[in-house]
Image (cartoon, rainbow, N blue to C red):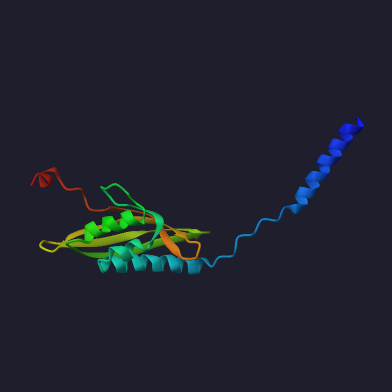
Length: 170
């Protein structure tokens, strides 16, 4: 080996060791209280239901992250908090809404949580009979930078049978 190659290798090794010493160890994930997180996610669901039952579209939308998405059946998704609020205002306008949710499970993994359950909803037009639907839902929540939880994705669908072709023609 020539003295020049030895010098280059020694310089490279010194640089590697210098920069390796400057690196910091990764910050370990903070210990999370999973039970408290599940309780907070359940409180978020309760807040959502209370706001729906109060016909308060803005309060329902406030339970979502800014980039939240709501995926209702037979409709395009409402993407973003403003779109979610606008969709809910259209649903609530002229209707009385009653929503009940029966959570079946919830899991938390770091800054993400999901919940699955059943629901029953009754939508009563100001002049008409109530339309009752039961179904199931799947929701994803995400921990926000301030530590709170917000809905990130929500999808649901009905257990009711689709209307028959004869009923659709009426």
